[in-house]
Amino acid sequence: MLDYVALTIHDYQRSKSFYQAALAPLGYELVLEISEWAGFGWGDKPDLLIRGGSSTTPNLRIAFRAEDRETVHNFYREALAAGGKDDGAPALRPEYDDDYFSARVLDPDGHRIEVVCHIPEDAFE
Image (cartoon, rainbow, N blue to C red; front, side, top):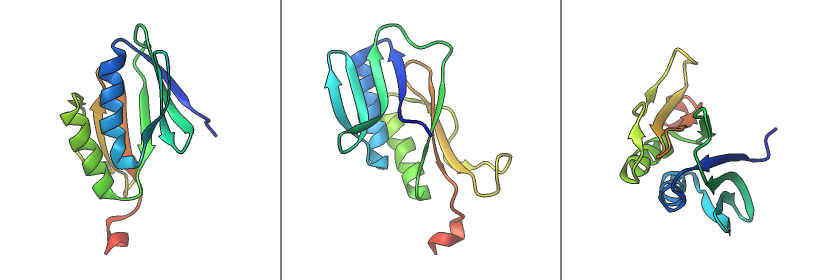
């Protein structure tokens, strides 16, 4: 089980703004900020940390779990509006699993950020 993931990014303010907007549909908030470190999570526990400097290489792929497909759509919309680049619009990806519904964006440093819902669509009816 992971405790947190940390990324080094080029432009601290740009990435902080991106992650605040992109992760808001998942309920994530900025819960920690020290110097050029920002932590996003719930309560006082960060799950994702970013730090200013030069970007982590190679680029990483991070997937967050969503409890419904609407959250996947909301993440995608907010992430693009905050400067993310499209890397896969919300869709089923049956090559992974019959109920794998996700959206992917590239963050300002080129890291692939994905939000996935594994719950079948008919479970929401």
